[in-house]
Length: 364
Image: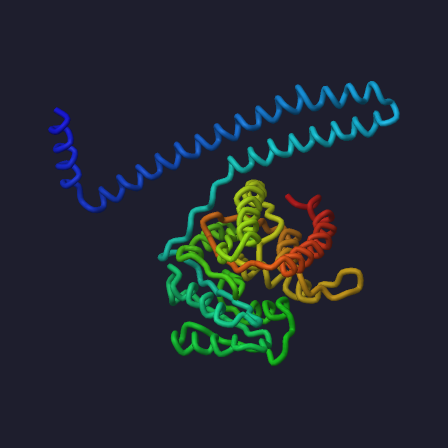
């Protein structure tokens, strides 16, 4: 009987056309993904319950006992209990928001808007060529895709690799060059002012996008309230040591957990320079203020991605995270380079957090 059932199943499968078989495979994959997600949600719920049990049946009672015995540190202990409780509540809120997140549907080739990709480059060498090739190979209509690559006064062979891409793909790539290094913000501003697309996509020159990233980025802009979309950043050079592997884990948490939660209430705080998309009309409204930004009397030259996101949020545009728009970027493999990168990020974080504290109360 089992042999007869198997033969019948094979006959039915052969009788189906390629479209039906493809639909069946897609349905099976979707069902498998749903079961996998449910298993993950269940394991997370069990973990949270275990944490709650340990915290409120073991840790907090001990802290209260200490507070009763030591009146001199009672206020400190109560503050610790409050901090622990708020941290636990934050974990629950973030987990719920993460579960609620769903990526927007991508644009289709038929309805895709005109799009300009801007790649600022400085001393990237051959990596800039890989970045350009990933955009050329992207699944996006060529007649609606403009590619601007801007060399910010590189001192190595970056310009030669950009010219090689222009020659390899005539009419597809526009190469621009600063005679001297002016910084990433000025380079992007030049690209924004030259771009002709309705959507502006920025990609770091040490980054490579996946084939469907551009259509995924363009999808959320169907909503006129969307001003910025953040892509998902993964590490390109994970095999280079412990630090890149650690950063890969950090990026997954930052994007698939934190930015996914922020996206649920349409307030992604930072659209990363490695891969982000902006509505051109929105950028034109804030471009000069962003380009000439000053903080404590000094011209701002770093943290341009977080700054642009803040300006757009301040202009009452929303910002989303698109998990299906994936980019792979080079990260430091040496400790001192890691420190420089994190210090630069944290400096801009402090500056833009101060700005965001004034903006958040005016958000719809």
